[in-house]
Picture 1 (cartoon, rainbow, N blue to C red):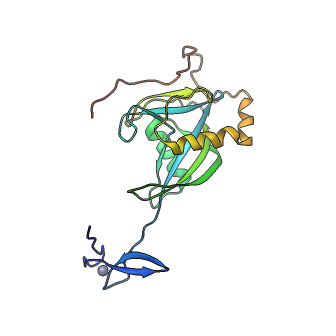
Picture 2 (cartoon, rainbow, N blue to C red):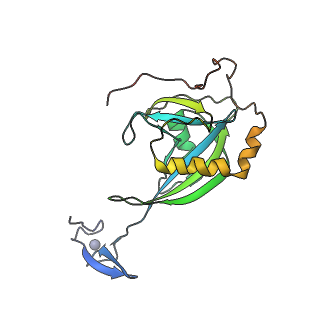
Picture 3 (cartoon, rainbow, N blue to C red):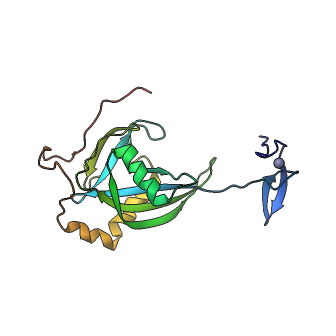
Length: 196
Ligand SMILES: [Zn+2]
């Protein structure tokens, strides 16, 4: 598939740069770099469990995932993580630590650099399904539902073995409305499935 320079519109030609074959402009300095995309995921801790959302969009429609998403080019990844939590679980989240940085190989698309954080709900915040979620809930780590992305399974595996997780054993009063919810696995609000 032909590609064109974003500066001058010329058809790109193949050039070897630092040993890699890349498409570049014959007229100016534009190079179509094959860079990874950067995505965040947040393990939001609530009462010893973690927050997951069930997706109302592809990929992974109907499956569960951690809140998170792509980082904009002018955005600090931590700010992107907090923004994605607001969009997906409708809650203000405070990040409490970095869990890991990892490479996510893709075929047929740019690979990704995943950055995962631990977080907790800000005082007074409660979770609710955002536009891209059918429902949200709090799950104990040993009874997780089917996840949409292998990378999120990896994040949760790293979370499980992270020393910081031991701090979770202390009771915390961050979650609001816990007494208002029925004592079930699900604490989130749900919304009916939408047709796309
Ligand atoms: Zn050009």
